Structures are given as C-alpha cells and as structure tokens.
Amino acid sequence: MHIIRPAHWQVYALVLLSGLFLSSAFGQSGKRKPNVIVFLADDLGYQELGCYGQNYIKTPNIDALADRGLRMTQFYSGSPVCAPSRGMLLTGKHSGHAYIRDNRNPKGLDHIKKEYEWEFPGQFPIPKDEITLAEALKSQGYATGAMGKWGLGHFGTTGDPNKQGFDLFYGFNCQVHAHNHYPKFLWRNGKKEILKGNDRTLYGETFSQDRFIEEAVAFMDAHQSDPFFLFMPFTIPHLSIQVPQWAVDWYTDDIVEEEYKHRGYLKHPSPRAGYAAMVSYLDYGVGLVMNKVRSMGLEEDTLVIFTSDNGPTYDRLGGSDSDFFESAGKFKGLKGSVYDGGIRVPMVASWPGKIPEGQISDEPAAFWDLMPTILSMTGNTK
Image (spheres, rainbow, N blue to C red):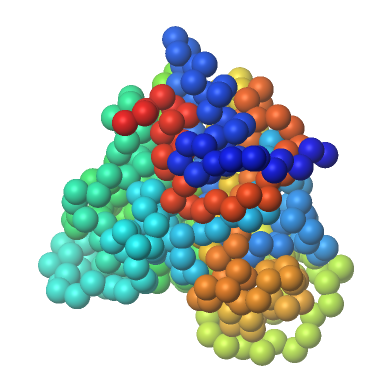
C-alpha cells in the first residue's frame, strides 16, 4: 500500500485532493461534469470504522471505498459539535470566518413556530448572502439534494435549505428533532411528511435512515442524465441508540453487555450491540447508495466522499460506550472537545479511474478544504 507524503501544498491546501484529483479533473473538458456524493456521519469517531482499526464493528462498504480510493489519517472536522461543523463544510470557511459558531437556537422565531406548527424552529440560520457548496454547484447546472439532518436554519429563515442551494431537502431540519430515529414526521421542502407507525419510542415502523436512502435513490433516478450533488448527512450513530432489531442481532452474540448506566436519551436493552448496529447500519446505507450508483453505470463519473461531523459522543451518555469501542482511537477527547478525539475524523474518498486505489495520506486537511477543492474538480475556478 502506497503512503502519500506530498512534498508541497497545492490548490486550496488540501494536499491529497490537489495531488490526486485535480490533474485528472481538469481533463474533464467536453465531458459530463462529475457527480458528487458527500456522506456525513453524525458523531462517528475516528476509530469506529474497520479501515481505521475498529475491532468490533463491521463496516465493509465504507472499507471498500477506502480500498478503492483514498483514506486520510489527519483529517479534521470544522468543529467538535454539529451545526458549526456542517456550516464550515458547506461554506468552505474555517471557524475564524464562519458565521455559525455553536449549536445555539435563535430567539424571536415564534412566527416560524406558528407557521410550521412546530415547537423546534431549528438552529441559528446561515445568512442570506452566504454561498454554499450546493449554491455553487447549482450555478454550474447541478441538481442538488440533501437527505438527513440540516441544523443550519429552519424553513422560512435565511437558513432554509431550499434558499441555500438545495432543490430537494428531505429529513430533520432541527437537531433536537433528530434525537429520535423513529420520528412522527420528516420534512420535505418545508412540508411535513408523516411516517407510518412511529410515536418517538424506541422502535417504530419507519426508520428514518431508510427514508433517507430511499429518497437518495429516487433523486439519483430522477437526475441520472444530469450532474448531481447528493449530500447525505445521516443522523446515525448520534443518540438515541435506535436501529431495527435485525441489525442489533448482528452483534448480540459477539458483544458482552454490562449494566446499563442510563444518562439521557432513550434506554436501549443492549446498548453496546445497539450502538455497533447503528454504525453498521450507516455502512449498510452507504452500500445501498453505492450499489445504485454502480447499477446506473455512474461509478467512474462520481466522486464520493465519506466523513463525520465531529468525534464520538460523550462516554456513557445514552448508553454509549466510547471506551469499550475505543471510538477515538489513541486520541484524547470526545465530541465537544478540541483535542484530536473531538475533531479528528475519518475521511475516505473514491473516484474510480481518477483516484488510485489503496492510497493513504498523512497530511493534515479539514472541512473547509472540501468546498474549494470540489469546485475546482467540477470546473469552477472562480
């Protein structure tokens, strides 16, 4: 396996992408622009994937992406918590310039609560004049869709995902809403879509992650002749620990449980197996989306990036056990910490025929490097 140690920084400081991607991407003139898929896990730790050394949890689909492309060992999220990290990824701005700095909820949005008949009006909105990755790609003729968790402003505010470049948004707008994976409803472009058989209890009939996958597949079907940007900010493995029982059964015989030290969120009867199952279900979802890409014959026309918004969740919260899984690897800190355990995250990129297989980069890079690099790869040099 070839270890990449580039001798110098090139475009936009993202060495791995400048060295491996840009030379081939600039050869795209006259051809279809590449599709872009960004998978974003929620609270996934640096060492919770098999390709990063995880011993208990199985992640064959993401591992395969790494084998077919590139894995980074010193990649950093934008922030140790959700909203600012996502904002930095989508705007290409680091924490010194980004508008969203924390997970705070805005005040004075009673009109939003009334209009949308919803008690949680979302996190602080991205400003109107902010340019997002979705807006930039849309200006290049891309169809744009996001399925998962937004957390950057409710519908009706300047942070409305439909006002920030996304043709389609489907999922949780507010982070608080996303703390249960069997919600009563999800949002489709500002309209509530009721989910059958759900009552925000531990189990329900309609698992939200399944709906994200189904919507992603439908989105790709609708735009297979056009370049598309698919942003998939899954809400797992963020707590609560909730996943279909058949996925939990993957681990019940292999992982020894201990007495549940409940602290917040819903109580799961097999928290270690349940948590492992959430990570594997995330991997399962990535696999289903990639199977669709391959079945459409688009794999060689699609750049795929997988990463996480921050480090693993606080140990023992909601039944999680970051120590048991060694979720942050050798690094100090967890979610909420600016030590490496809170901000160093997995990053895998795949583009057959453009990114050589089995690449590893130990050069540092971060969320704010992704937007300018992706835009360069798709032909936008402004």
